[in-house]
Amino acid sequence: MIIDKLKSKNQILLLLFIAGFAFVSCQEKNNNLGLELIPDDQMLQVVTLKDNNTSDSFYERDSPIRVDEPSACIFGVLNDPLLGQTKGSIATQMRLTHKPEINATSVLDSAVILLSYRSFTGDTLTPQNIVVKELSGSLDKDKAYMSSFDVTSLVSDKVIGNGTFTPHQQMSGADTLTQIARIVVTKEYAKHIISLWDKTDESGNLIYENGDAFVKEVKGIYLEPQNVPSNRTGALITTNGSYSISKGMSTYPVDLRIRMHIYTTTTVPDESTDDENDTKDVQKVISLYSTKYSATVPKMEHNYTGTAVADELGNERGSSKYLYVQPNEGLRSVVKLNILSELKDRWTVQSDSIDVDAPDDNLYGNDKIFINKATLKIHVDTLASEYRTMGVPRVMTLRYIPKDSEDGDLRDNENGAYIAGSFSSSSSSYVFDMTKHVIKYLHDKVENSKMYLIPFNRVASTQRAVLFSNKSEQGIEFELIYVKKGISERN
Image: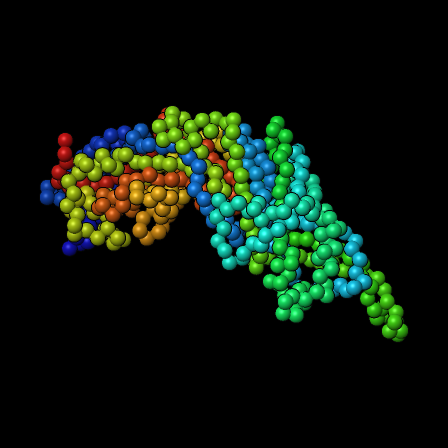
């Protein structure tokens, strides 16, 4: 019965829009154009409410996030003039993809770790020094690692590699070419790997032929960038860690996995002669990779010391006109829409018979209010964000924090969906469709609690954004379009 009424009202609403209803800003206002065409008992009023000054907003440190099995790893040091220093390191297991062709005659020539990347954030002038250390403790592929885990507790003091690179980018047509940072591995570490060629595990199997036995012997590596001078920007590169790009995904098939190549000179039979005793020396390579079977745990560190951000970090009553969003357990913006509580207090609620989860049922107030659309717009300061050089996240998610949750529930409602908004370069803002959330709130399905804004890609991104808070001239805009009929309102 209610759905039939709803369909009838949708037809009437369409007529009203075609008749040229003008939406009104800043306050609730009614436009009577065309209402003489509608019978008195069907009289509806289309109302647009815009509000940009009753929201609360502030910024705070983001909560720990899961970081194992990342789609990409962030590496390097960036001195952000706004957000201070960000430092990205990587711990990963190295695995063999096939048994190496070496023997007791193999002699080490050289060894190198290759760190590939196709994109970066920062400058192209500052060299970055890399130190590689050996893992003394084991990573667990089946374990879920949070960003709060101190992976350095598994790192030894033993340095097994050093290298220097300056981030840069090269293009070929529309495709970005792969750049490689090369890190020289110590001969001592490389010789240890070569020495395993004929060793067996506890079960008598060759270690080189048993991946799990190999990572027990060669536990992994920790790649750590060294600080760059405070007067230099530095850069963060994005590497795929344990994944590679196939031919179908790129014009130029590349391998972006972290890998180690150990080059040896090995004596092998010379099959080009008839004498079975003849031998020759050839170069053989032992290749180790951070694969999908490896445990990979990135480590991100943020230091806000001495920045303007630090002064109001986590201050719910702060006066800053800016909000900040930063990935990798950096910063999140928090918003609360006080206007919703005011509306709910004004409108008489009789909604026991309404199924708010029905896709076509947006009624509120027992056939008195029809919620057409609710949107939240948060503006970006593109100048402060350095949009052209640093970029901003393409998609943000707005997540709901129930009052009774101490650590912050990541769901915006009981079905677990997230409210997402894409960046619009034309309006320099993120726009979120809040319709379902508002309806659920008016029906007491969710509370009007804080919501926090984070990048859709929380782990494998370097892009941050500077947003205008409710203290700014732009404000945080909430727009509600609804149709009402004979509603009882409280003064």
